[in-house]
Structures are given as C-alpha cells and as structure tokens.
Amino acid sequence: MKRCAVFIPCLFLFLSVSGQVKTGKNKDTDLPPPRDVKLVDEHKDGSGNIIRTIQYLQNGARITETIVIPAMAKIGIHVPVDPDTMNKDSVMIMVNKSHYSVEVYYRRKIIRSYKAVFGPKPLENKTMAGDRCTPEGWFKIQNKNPGSKYDKFMLLNYPNDSAMARFNMLKAKGAIPASARIGGDIGIHGIWRGGDDLIEKGVCWTDGCVALKNKDVEDLYALVKVGTRVFIRK
Image 1: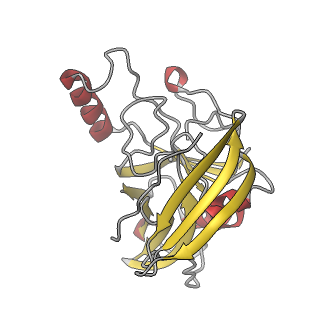
Image 2: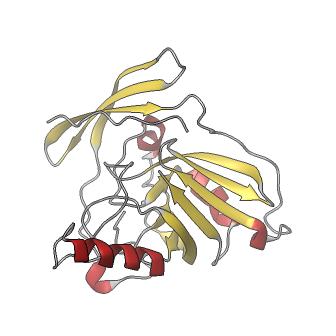
Image 3: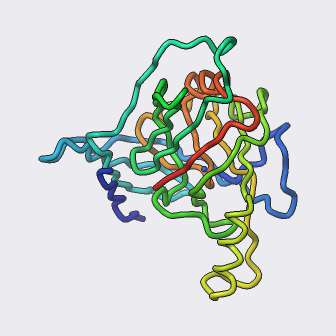
C-alpha cells in the first residue's frame, strides 16, 4: 500500500486521553500506532528542501510516505524565558502544518519552535469526525491535562463557532454527509514513551491532533495557560 507524496509549499488526533475533557458523541476510535518505522531515503532538492521517504507498518499494511519539508522551516529556536514570571497573556502558538512545526510567540517575538506531526493528510482542513485531519483557524487552549497517556495534553476549543459555521455550510452544500458529526477532542500533546522517533522522522500518525516530542510538549505546557490563543495554518 502506497500513499501519495505530500508536497509542502514554501511559505491535530481524536484520542480518548485519560483525564482530558471528553466530547461524548464526537469521540473517534483510536487506531493502532505505526510500527517498524524506517527511513528509506532523505536528500535535499535544488532549493534546499528536505525530501524524506519513510516506511512503517499500520493495520498490517506497509505504508510508504514521502514528505517535503521546506528549507525555510523554523525548528529548534529556544529563547530563554522564565515561565514563572512571564506574562502568559502575551503568548501565542502558531501551528504550521506545511512546515511540520509549532512556534511559540511571546510579545510578538518567536521564542520556541518544535518539530510536530499531524494526521496522515496534514495539508487538508478538518471537515468532520473520522477524517483524521487537523482543523485550521483560530482556537484557544480549553483545558490542560498534566497526566495524559501522551505525556501532556492541551485541549483546544474545537469545534468553536467558526468551525461549526463551516461544518454547517459544508453540510448544506452536500460536501459532507447529512449524518456527519463535527468531531472533537483535538489538542496538542506528546507521544508514548520511546515514540519520539516518529516525530523526528515526520510520521503523521494522529487522528487530527498536533503531536510533539515529550520534552517539547513539557516545555510548551509550562509556557501556556487555559485561554492561550492557537492559530493553525496550512
């Protein structure tokens, strides 16, 4: 089984996480995580973009996936700040799906950038429950769970009014089934112990959430509060 290549232009996981806020009827079924992940090839093209081909097992099938990460992607920025004294009202998170990154801005200046992965269709906007896509637009952190099975979990207020309006419009146009649900339980979280390699290689394994390495999600967790604004873009 082979997936189409994901082209990244230059310019989140329906998981039932223990202790987090649940959305009941909008909860989706967890899929087994990818196993036996292998880096098949990695090189740079003429523009300096990273071309990476990976293979892994999921549901008994061998998946081959190619991603392109732009040369301009910002990863690894770490500006010293004190989470205990900073004004967290001045913190904003930017999730850039094209760059496979999460950036943190403090007083309009970038202070952090982490590697991130999403669902298997990272460049598609979420339309309904079960599509495994990460929603785009403005959201807020609705709840913080320090004891998630994925290390730390920051639940987003999806679906918000904007997402609901778009969902209803798609239903009215017949673009999605009349029986479709909008979904929920979207957030930013870590990964199981020993799973950081999936983030490093860029394996998009979630059902719509944004996944980070555990050391990064712990760092981010200390910088934000309930109410922190999050912008997710293609």
